[in-house]
Structures are given as structure tokens and as C-alpha cells.
Image (cartoon, rainbow, N blue to C red):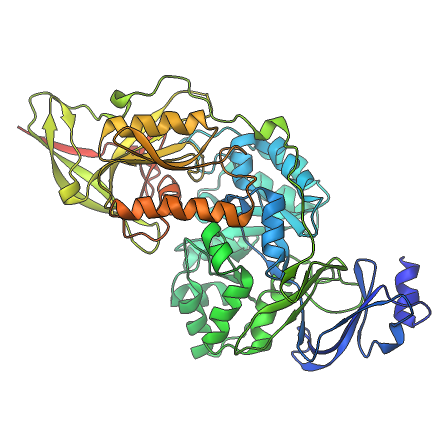
Length: 588
């Protein structure tokens, strides 16, 4: 029992900090009323009329009639997608009012296993961002279809679930539940047996019996809703709807429209970002930007705040700890303007003032990274231009191939059959038909695999793009219109310890290095954002219409998103969970 907290709550001892003269947004009752919040250490002691908690040494923050809300919570986010080391990431999102996140650090685990995740969690302890760890449900994400550096099995998952900040199991994939993967179901049992831990779902296109089975298995949330039917399917089955409003997928506007037009209860709905691009974080913000989008759609102010606070906490069973302004909760507090011109003015995290009218008051020094997070790019075999050639019968003149096209607004791939020239037994790409070479090179030093296929939708000409960020195996994904530039790009990516870059005419035209697991940089947000804008501009100049081409490229190797993918093991038919030949027929 925290007797000091009790003393402050009773008025026997003054608070350390008081926020007063504001309008409290009460996410429990749905009210807005005048008052303040008193804080003892890192915990809220009183809410409402807190004048009795003020003493001679109490720090007072005047809300000046603005709104006092709980700190924001993102219930599904992969910090690694921001390309920032965790301390810089924490600093960036705290500046936008986000005081807590739920994350699996799955991308770290893919490269460096549980040791890597533990190292990053240790680094994060130096920040004021509250991190709730959701244990990855399986690594590699697509068993038998990709190679990863790290590996998770039930034994490792049991160890991870015992970490003090572990709150559940992440990304429980619907098709794998339906197939009753033995190890996955074993981890379900382990998670649920520990009490208070949840199963977080990844349930795209799950309806009827399929959804029933996933919910019966114990899954309670899903961030993969895309359409009106998905909204009803989740809410009617008691599954928390996590509306995604991120960089690679912006599903919230349509989902929210469905909710509002049908007057659906919002208590089981939250807003998440999933993947957040560096430039978007720098120029637009985090959940504060999502709230601006929701409020501009006409969503009630209190309901909007609930979607990034209490509703999120409740979906993890954490509502007694975070997500609201009430005695005993972590002192995560924002002062904000109203719905018409919403912005976060001041943020307090764990009782510590982080910002003051938009000015950042804290800074976290870069960590001395554990060795397991560094030097993670290793080729087993040399990569040359020949590594990417798809060989066929030398007598063939043309080849009918399956080209996967990405949509321009979300990295989902679809089939397009095209005819390509064959020269000396090698199938040629065709930029006039928007057909490029694409490959993934195993970079964990395990087997030297190179998977090869054909790509459409990017429309680039005159070079190659390469990235060591390739979900969910983080091998090197490379795409281009000639083999020579592709080889230079991959080798340069290895040389700099991972990153994203563009090669034109054999020379590097732009690059960003990610020395931490080949995924992240220690650069501060503004500097990293500027480098990535340059990288994107070069890609735009090469013809791509895609706003964030490298983030899209990194999802083309995700073997659980339909319809096709490329991994180090080959060209993947996602629906069939099979490696297939991109060459359909030879024409002589």
C-alpha cells in the first residue's frame, strides 16, 4: 500500500504536482467538467476539486481553461517502422501526447530474437514512455516460407510471457488458428493460464465460422478491419475493433463512418497506428493526428478521447493502471485544445512534465547498444548480377509470367499475367509494361537464399531500390530494372549494416543507414526525416507514384498478406501458403 499516495488523496500531505483550472475529460462517465488533477510521485492522487492538495512546494500547471485528458495509448504499433531507435522514438511520440504503447518489438525479434527484444526494452527504461510488451506469437511469421535471424518457440514464448511488462500474445494469425498449428495453440494455453494476459488478433477476412473459431480460441482484438462488414463481424463477436490509421494503411475513416452511421456503441473501439513512417511522424504527428482525422469526421470529442485512452487500456485489461484520470492510475496527463483545432499543448508522463505548450522539456541520450543489435547483415554467398536472373530454356523467345502488382494506396498485391522477352535463356523485365525484377536476399548468414519474381505498381525506371527492412523476415528486398544496379544495391546495404538506398548507373544516389538490426537509426527525428525525404524524392524522380515507396517495398515480402509475396525462399502464393514459379509458360 502506498501510504504517501493515501496521505495526498486525503489532504494530509500536499501533492507533488497539480494541474488545475481546466476542463476534465472523464473517460469513465463521458462527462466534461471543470477541475484539475493532483499527482503524488508517478500516480494520480485526486481528480476534480484538487485545491486541497496544493502546498507550498507543489508544482502547479495552469491549464488555462483547456481540456485535461488522459495520456494517449497506442494499442498496436511497431516502433521499428519509424526507423528510429527506441529512445528517440519515445521522445517523438511523447511530444505528441502519447504516454504509452502496446508493442511486440516483433521486428527486433525477427533479427535478434528474445535477447534483442530484452535489450531494447532495457534501453527504453531510460524514457518516460510506458511500454507494455506483447510477446510475438511466432517467429518466423510464415513458417517454412521465409528465413529469419531470430526464432520463437513455445519455450521461448513462455520465458517472454514472464517478463514484468508482458501483457499478452501478439499477432495471432487467423489462418494459423484455423489450421490448429500445434505450437501456436500451445502458446495460447500458456498465455491464458497466466491470468490477465490477452490474445491479440491478426484476423483479415475472417467471417462466420472462421471468426467464431478465432474468438472461441480466445482472441479478443483485431487491427485488420478494412470494410463495413469487418466492423460488424468484430463488434458482434465481442472482439475489440482497433481502427488502423497509420502510414501504410489508413482504414479508420471508412470504419468510423460505418460506426457513426449505424450508431454503434464505441466502448470496444480504439485507434491504432500499426506502422508509422518517419516523415509522417515528423510532419503530422502520432495519435494526435489520428484524433484530428476522427474529429473532423464529426466524432464526439469524449468518444474520440476514449478511443485513444480508456478503450485501449480496457482491451488489454489494464484499465486500473492506465487510460483514465482517476486516483491510483499512472499520472499520464495531457492538456489539449478542443475539437475544432485539436492539438496537445502539454504532456505529463508518469508524473513528469514532458512538454510545456509544445516545447520539449526532456531529452534521452542515445543508448550504448547491446552487441546482439549490431552487425546483423551477413551474406553467406557473394551477390552478383547473375544472382537475380531467372533462367529458362535458351530456345524460348518469350515467357508468360505472373507479375504481382501492388495497389498504390496499400501494399496488397494482385495477379497480372504478362508476356516478357527471353534473351539467352534469361527472362527480361519490361518497364513499358511496368514489370520490374524483384528479389529477396537472405541476410542473416544462414543459407544464402535468393528468391526471385516480377513486380508491378512501382513504375520506377533507371536503377534499383534495396532495403534491409522486409517484413516479416527482414532479409534484403531489392527491386530494379537491371541486374547490375540490384547487385550494387544489395552489397551496399550489407556494407552499411543495413538500411534503405537507391542505386542508379552503378552508383548510390541516396541512402539511409540503419545500423541497429538493419532496421533503425540513432539519428534524431528531424535529421532522419530529412534523409528519408531525400530518399523518397529520388524514387519519385524515377517514376513511382507511391507516397512511401520503401515502406510499401518492405511489405511485399510479407507472406501473410494476400495475394502474393516474395521471400528469400521464393515467390509465394499467400492463399495457398506455397512457393510457386513466377514463370507460367514458355513461348518459342
